[in-house]
Amino acid sequence: MTTTLLNTTELGRTGMQITRIGFGAWAIGGGDWEFGWGPQDDDQSIAAIHRALDGGINWIDTAAAYGFGHSEEVVGRALAGVDERPYVFTKASLLEGPGRTVVHSLKRDSVLREAEASLRRLGVDAIDLYQIHWPNPESEIEEGWAALAELKEQGLVRHIGVSNFDVSQLELAQQIAPVESLQPQYSLIERGVENDVLPYAEAVGAGVIVYSPMGSGLLSGAMTPERINDLADSDWRKKDPRFNEPQLSEHLSLVERLREIAERHHTSVGAVAIAWTLRNPAVNGAIVGMRRPDQVDPLLAAASLELDGDDLALIEARP
Image (cartoon, rainbow, N blue to C red):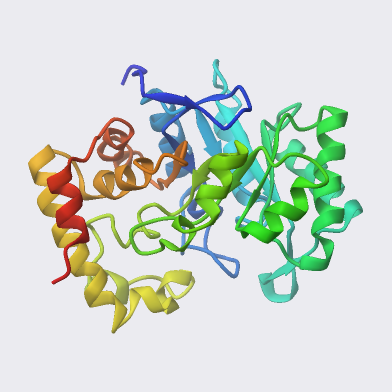
């Protein structure tokens, strides 16, 4: 596969021209931690990354928490032999606790240690975008954000952003250093940020990259009750209310409407779900999780798919 040209846009005011979709590396962290996605083959992960880069994607979003370093290590391995390195984004603040559970810290020394470890695992001299993963503990937001600003001043990270922040937390951070980007969860089944967070980001010029635009696979078109039942016990989705009744039937009904639109545009259901998030004027890019190389090509179309009024009316229709 030869590299193709995907639509790009500037991420906020960072100067980084990013493709409208990026490679999401949550699932490739594996299943042996609190929010794992079940067993994952590293060679498949690397092949998926290479396929995405060949398809024109020019950024990867990972986090130290994904498999507690494993996702970053896999990304680092995948990029070791790449001539033209994509932008690499990662996150701090989630540490390994007892029994591979997540504990939170935004203490300065902890953030600086995390950045050093991420740089080593990723094999890069500087992280293109370093983000606070979660605003917890809230009492440490100012200390943690000041630490990210310090890392930027040192040149160890090029740009700094946050994930999962609400407007009040964004305003708190803005008093210390500009928030260059925001990463919220946003999809047709998680729309809460439409009302205040996205308008705020747009107003202050912060870039936005949304995660889980396919609802963690629920809107991919491939999810069925049988498949959910067969998910590994180490896959966090198996216990998520959205993947269980009574919510599941409502979500799968939405998927059938997306399927009708996908057939009209000769594309995949997942691409329609992703394209819906990209139509919001505040959104610069969508983080798309891909675990195998065969998952990549059907989703690349989302970068250029434009939904029309009929499509949107069908999406919003209630059964």
